[in-house]
Length: 248
Image (cartoon, rainbow, N blue to C red; front, side, top):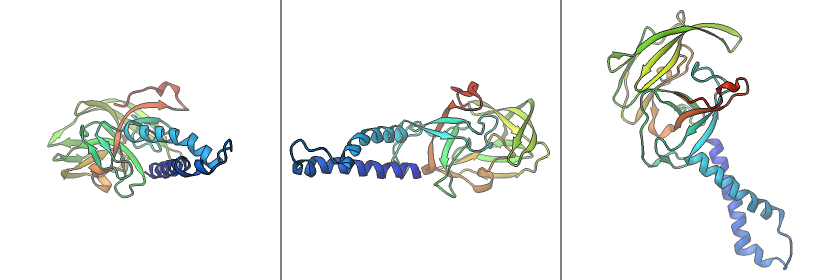
């Protein structure tokens, strides 16, 4: 959000300088005189900044995964692309929808502004949509009273912050139309609860169920906080094999 605001400021500044030159300054310069440096740079950068701003606002925006809350689907260091128009076109910065299209569906991976601090962007999986009754009990997820289909896949270990070795179990979970991997740490404490998702809100959870700061702790994500749908890993410096991987 802060980057979008910065781009708007720079875009407005360079555009105004260019416009001021066209309307006023150019007429006052002597014939053949060189353009002021500020005018020259503004004319050069304005079209580039405008193109980047439009692409990031309405088409796709890149993000970097900063934590392991979405493991094993997304790893720390993954650079991902987010579709900005899947859930409708939104006014930059204000984030109000002005052209409604689709709504988030269960199982989709979504980027959103953290409700408690909108300057931060979070990424989690959509678990509950408006009207759903979500229950998490003894490390099992229930949607509208029905337990999700979960199948054991393999053991999984990773190094958490602080160089702690975590031993987890990897499962295949089916949520909506999505079959994805989740991690469960058998001996980790769990937060159980049952909630009903209110209208215009979504319940989000990380795939790394025992190491994710999500809706179980801070509540629902309002419609206006949605950024877009994550759809592809476009870069990873540590594992080139992940480049081009679709996010399911």
